[in-house]
Image (cartoon, rainbow, N blue to C red; front, side, top):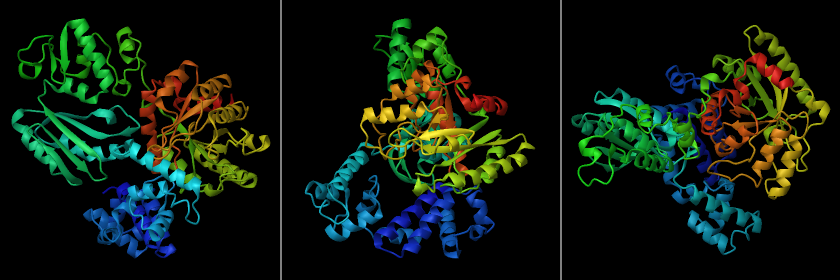
Length: 584
């Protein structure tokens, strides 16, 4: 297991103990352990090997032993016993947004509701509203949450799918029978949520069986759902389905394109092959259209293509990057030689919208800055929460000045290494569109990220006016997570994004891609329009710990899907360039 999987188990243990009504201090210990493991800046395996887990504040001998057992054996007896002692349906109920262990315990104790279906029935019968602490509004929100869970069933966040795919693709690469291999599907296209993971391998026919066998016997596989001579399907730990297909090497370029998709992109390519070349196209290659004899699978492609670049060239197109393959104008642009040179991770020189222990982060400003420097960045923006965010330990005016003094002192140290900390704030946009700090306080910051964190139930007109008013403020630099969505958990609030984008363009404001995998907001589908209006992007990890800085890579994928180039992204500027841009 990696540290995120270990953290997820300890989070679930905390929830199970809370469901049982266990000692609150014990419950909190497991929740805290989950948070600390997930945010470890060091490799978990190294800490275990060197017996240094107990050096971490809050992790005693008992928790360290359990973490070690889980990490080294992929099992934890205590967890399995605890899980088996509770109705499985209770855990499923915890997936409902806003329906935590305390509420689940109440409905279980009072009504013996132990499944999502029973909870839905109890809501429809009005039984949940009658319980103390619930009411009609809570009951309706639970029903809406159940609908969301069902809507997103079988979907997974990008980062979880990516993490699950990496050890498998590495194992495939190292297999002696594998010639070439790749991840395909929506994961390769950097979609924000993933249904399943596609793997494609080229090999000689004699090696296919061994490759399939190794794939289905890997650690971390819960079940094998299909297994044939050239393809197999498994369910991975965490419930993600993974599919492997083995093709010959001369079929590889065609199969990789086909199994990368999207379906709409593939349909458009097939139509082009037919119109341009009078050829049929499938995952095995080109073949004469209308012939009923042997196909490209049996005879081989009538046009040989070693790579995807060759494949697009055969269709008289420039190479289309996987992230763009959504049938949203990329084929026309490829035909006309107008595809953009997409931004790359190596182009990033810094980032903004990161948190520290001053609000709800778990690392100091200095530790976050050092981690950014270690990643090769030239600058880092710390933007802790403003005072209205009480639950996130938001800063009042007095603490703002204290933090400003700390950042100023740290910048003397980091300047010797050519690195700078930008002093920012994630300032709440209040219900009327005003900001959480007065202008005198806002003027202390190098930049201001304006975000909505409360009042999500406004109608579209009011929410749009609220955000546009904030964007008109001269001291606002950028808009944070514009729709407030939490992927697979919560839809964004009602807002007219074209109007918001127009306001950002009018007032020369930046809009962020919040690269946290739960957000990935602003949505990639909106960036092409924003770019046309001249709106600049900031790719921000919304980092609350050091490992979260790695989310910048996810943000790059979303930026690429949005057709963004290096010139469109503000944090591709050098330190001097971004200092000038922020002053402007």
